[in-house]
Length: 142
Image 1 (cartoon, rainbow, N blue to C red):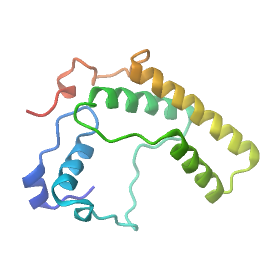
Image 2: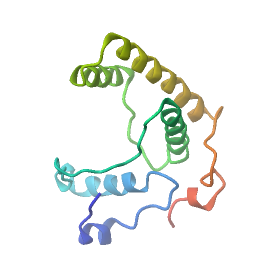
Image 3: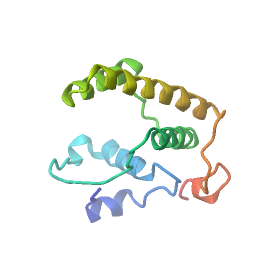
Image 4: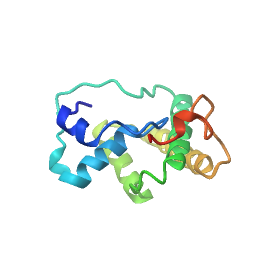
């Protein structure tokens, strides 16, 4: 993400959260100036949050769910509905030419991921690591 200095000076710094400070920063910009204040650069290439295995995908699911729970007072964005998620999966499968077996496998992984997300958000499973609920990194920036 690239940010103009003036925007960072007006809306920054990022909230000091284990995850999601950049998203909350952008939400402040959009709340003040609307979506036209953001730009998407189609040719930009970013390597971010590589997910190269089912295990890494499930680990990210737990991380995102616990982060969303921790930050829910700051981030009021509505997650995608199941219908919207299914549509995105169908579109990705079509665009990438998934075989029937790959469609079934990816849909099963996504279903397990959805269940894991729910369990993580409810607190039945938690992400391990330094950004726990009681760590200073999880507190909002003063």
